[in-house]
Image: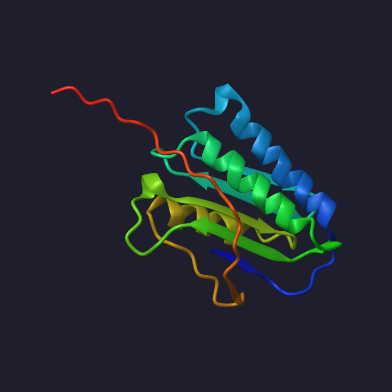
Length: 146
């Protein structure tokens, strides 16, 4: 699900560059145990959360798709919330990206807390926009020995 605010003033290439930075972060092997990343530059605040049962390739795929979606317009929306989540989602299987171009760090922080508890985020101030954005999800295999 993607929720996108109307209008915008920020150049979409600047926002896509922030998303691209997060994508590269998850490609780095040293980030294998991180569940969340925050970036703050200019007035752009961005955060990606990935549950510990999802592979980092999920983050890379979703961030690439979101960046491509953002670049379809000249200006980026003030706020974007994208998540792989439903009512019964285990926090380990939840993925989300929150981008705000109006410097609202507290909203990003609250969203991160919600996702860490397995709670889907619905921003009532944003229109619900269901987009067909292709994202591949990789579940981590669990090797359990009894």
